[in-house]
Amino acid sequence: MNIRFADRMEEVKPSAIREISRLIQQTPGTISFAGGWPAPELFPTEEMKAVCVNIIDEDGREALQYTSTEGYLPLREFIAKRMGASGVDIDPKDILITNGSQQGLDFSGKLFVNEGDVVICESPSYVGALSAFRAYLPRFVEVPMDEDGMIIEELEKALAQNPGAKFIYTIPDFQNPTGRTLSLERRKRLVELAVKYGVPVIEDNPYGELRFEGERLPAVKHFDTEGIVIYLGTTSKTFCPGLRVGWVAASSDIIRKYVLIKQGADLQANTLSQRQIAKFAEMYDYDAHVRGIIDVYRKRRDLMMDMIRKEFPLNISYTYPKGGLFTWVDLPEGMDAAEVLKKALEQGVAFVPGEAFYPNGGNANHFRLNYCTSSDEKIVEGIKRLGRVLKGL
View 1 (spheres, rainbow, N blue to C red):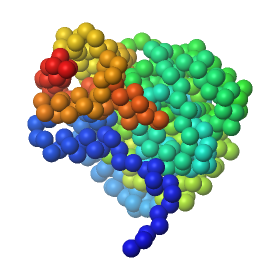
View 2: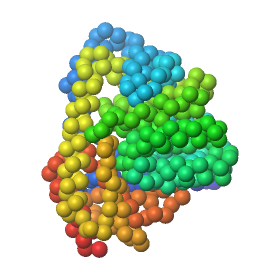
View 3: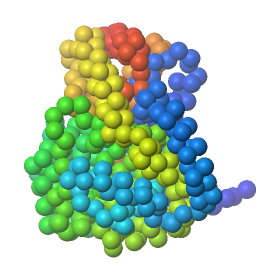
View 4: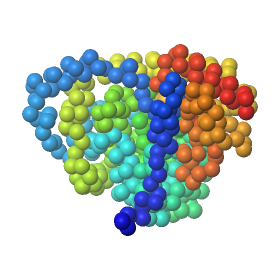
């Protein structure tokens, strides 16, 4: 049968991370640093039992009914208040609840990108965002990074050379995959350049609340006085990812367009999930919950950094994240992390090779490690195994 699919399906590829997860499942006992998952033992399961009973007892019929496309208002009010901690003054009516921030990424591609349009992004960048945008057939222009995030001089070159660029995509806090954070001065300059060239910024910020040390930097949107920054957030890294609750925060005229896309996609996000988060925040101390996550992740970050220093060869470098979930490892030029992964899997340890994080490919001599999901014992043993593999190359 000659079934004719849309041309865009040629650009839709399997998730590299999901494929690695499949390989791991085939090898029991593998220690995985591959996924971007939070630690499940930190999920507030007992509290959520009480939350669910409370919701059903008090508002069961409403909780199981449709709600507005924009989302449950008490949840949007809660989100607006939390965004205030990062310096963003946002009206709850300018927040749209999505099915995870991944849906916000997909909607952004649908809203802005025609085939052949330029999307400017950090290099490397989040593979899930690249997959979401790629379905709309853009041309990616990569901006290199250093320890302070996206290099602003290189960004300006990219903007000058691509005057029709549709948006700049950035993860400013504890970036996925590198763990790097965009400096304060660069945040200001990013917004200035966006205004100068008339190019929106999509600020994807799933990790901003997970800072282990130092003061929290204001969001990029904090510096936005022209309504040019679109902020994507999620509760997946600070609460329960299975609830699939994220949001888009933007100026009213832009949010209206996202709402129209949402109506055509799935009408609304899950009513019960939205109420569960709002009710948890009402019944319990959400800040204390986040602090508990930070304490655990900080210790695991410290342990992995210490083990890497002890076990990795001296010719291998890596980032030292001040928050978030990931560190990024640089192998010597000419080395292929995908080939290293094959040897690592034989030793029962896994990571994500770096090439998938580069929108235009190449740069095979990198890989990403997640230090948050594994226990202390698995971090110690897993890095020892990986160190043996790297020393044997």
